Image (cartoon, rainbow, N blue to C red):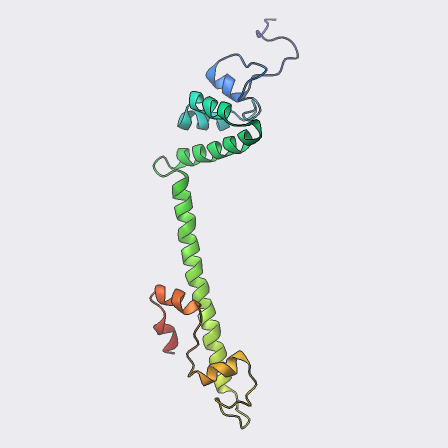
Amino acid sequence: MKESGRKQGAPSPCAACKLLRRRCAQDCVFAPYFPADDPQKFANVHKVFGASNVNKMLQELPVDQRGDAVSSMVYEANARVRDPVYGCVGAISSLQQQIDVLQTQLALAQAEVVHLRVRQTASMPNHGVGPGSPSSSGSPSSRLMGSQFRPTFDMDTVVDQANLGESMWLC
């Protein structure tokens, strides 16, 4: 049988050295972060940043920060492979849009809850106590009765920003 060129029992080269077709030295800067069993990880980083640039970045960083740097480079490289134009900025933008939509939905749901509470309070009998009477229960809904069904709170500005503010109170 033919020898593979490596000594018996020697570890296989890291994914970076395999891709670059070079001998993996014992002090290889890539080896701890790009194991041989995950070659695509380095392939994407190499495609986006280049092996020389990655090597320089890792050499300049303290050893305790290299893992985080590699993790960031892998994330950015994978995002660039999926979306070559925007990369991870596209993912961030998409998540921000989802947050905006969900905040608007939350504001609408909160406004609807307040509206339903006001309607429920208005349909309940007074038991001889007027809406502005100091002897009322002091609950938030009874205070709303005295403020002519128009609650004021921070959420109003969110609903107004979505051009939905006044239409919620016309019911």
